[in-house]
Length: 444
Image (cartoon, rainbow, N blue to C red; front, top):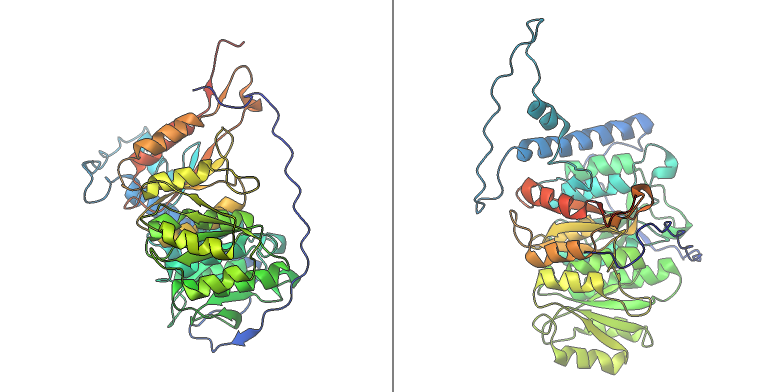
């Protein structure tokens, strides 16, 4: 399919970022350290943690790269390779298949895709944070990190707004009892030091969690109250009101997932509504910004028209962005544009993030990838083995091409989130093919 914008045009200059005012410092709440974390790391320890995490993800890719999909998949497990023949020196020769498995391809990466192959959101969040903030030098580290409970998907999605400039705090997961090893190692490597943009805080904790040192704490509870608290923190740190507000479903996390990527990219806060009720905490938060446009994400089965009418009484400018199911809903948001709101990704030359619709915390874990690098929307797949047909059609619609010079073309890149249980290598390979640059026409 011919792209909707010139294929050989030069890549436009990056948009200048708005200057942000230095926010007020949030009140830090000290908490006794509940998991033994090492003191502030130096560069060697940060590098060591990075290496450990990288090996974990590559190992996952290698192990699963030779197996089929989930239990419902019809793909058979690949047979083990036959012993390699000995070379002239009597040593065993390495076969091409063994070499690719050792490198982690294609399960770990292809020319158009990169997998963050953690077995759970905590591992995926650590991988995404370190992909965006390699932390080999102080300039590559974030000023702060947000910790969220492993079971608090709603708090995690709402906290993605703190990844937006000027705060840029990636998400890691914790528990009330201890910081998981993978999060602790990532935090050790990231080594946040705080800044005026973070109110001097190095950690933001959403709820009662274990963390080393001190943190600025946002109380958590029901999704609406938690999100309202995060929105209030966002207002203090950013020092200005949001341009837009997103209302997501508190009862259908699969419809709420795409909001995380947009919040990280835009700085627009996420608030929650139930199917037939606008929570008091959400109504109160909306009253803080009655002139700000509100966008309801999801169909009426997730957030009813009755709730939209209640929102309109507080904030008159309300619009709905929706698809009939979670996969279609994410695609609708990726395509949507209304002034400065929406991804408006309807042409080649973009990044994308692909995650499973049954893992809402992964939307928050991957949010930093939508706010850096090849910035792009979150798309969903509802099966480990098969790419949904509508997602395939969308990728074909935005497939990049060139006429004469491929080095002057636009390119697509897709981050694949999760291990083979989430999205198997066959689906990744299909996505890679759909993103491949193709020659169009008979240009020389």
